[in-house]
Length: 419
Image (tube, rainbow, N blue to C red; front, side, top):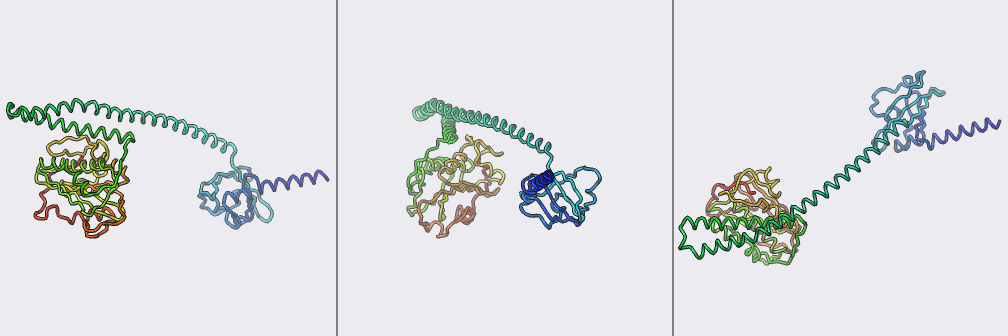
């Protein structure tokens, strides 16, 4: 008697364990394939009760009518099914089917312990491999960072060391040009001019290398101050204006006269202006005009530099602000550059919290835009006829409405793509 009671107690405990705790699926299915009863594990997999649903609906890629007689062979061979789960990842179970009274079926599904262990071992191996690859990547990244720092240091040292003998070349070429003009032949004076121009070009390239090495090293320090736009812009364009006059190119500046302020590093932003103007000058011809204008939105002040070049294709526009990028065409008269001017512009503008972009179509010139955050909450009037420009397309539309020369049509584009 005690043995019978013990066996019943064991049966009850086993049933409770299977129904409430065990990581197996237990289902009671009626003759039509509907689920009448489930255990807790099945409910957890499905994210809720599946009672009343068809067993076939819980199986991934099961498109047949569920016929229980197919799954009640004389053998004990299990059937493999992929069961849907609430998180979307199916789980594979091996099912055994047993006929009960009233043509009902007990379906017991369990995962293969060996398969689960193999999967776990595979995942552990993949995780270890990923950790090893991550460590290797970290080492290579650190090595690349060291090489990059050494490269920047080399640029800085090389440029600094070359600057002194270059200054000597400039000084003596200027001395010879001033003091010995009458004693030199025209050919000699021409050669001396080449020496001076080459020295000036080399100085510009060295300055770009020095600036870029500082920026790349993350050592760009801004000294911002409230700055009146009108006098600052007039001063900023002076170096490029002098060079433009030598080339017969006119730079037209139309700043507002309302005392609006920019919160900027005046020296660095003057470098931005001259880099943009220098870029335009490289592709300008005698008689061309370069137009510099300022516009305002509620949140930004926009500076534009517009040239009369042949324009830039959309493909090349994506790469303009990358360092050392040289496009397929060359500047007029084969003028040289470091390939860093526009990259430096982007770094300085970004450091100011601003944006820089270009708008152009082949054959229609190019307009470079620099947008900086406003510090004056009031939007000035006058320069844009009180229109508030809210995006770069509106700025571009306004620019295109303004004629470069009110008295005549601009000359046909002659320059080539900026570097």
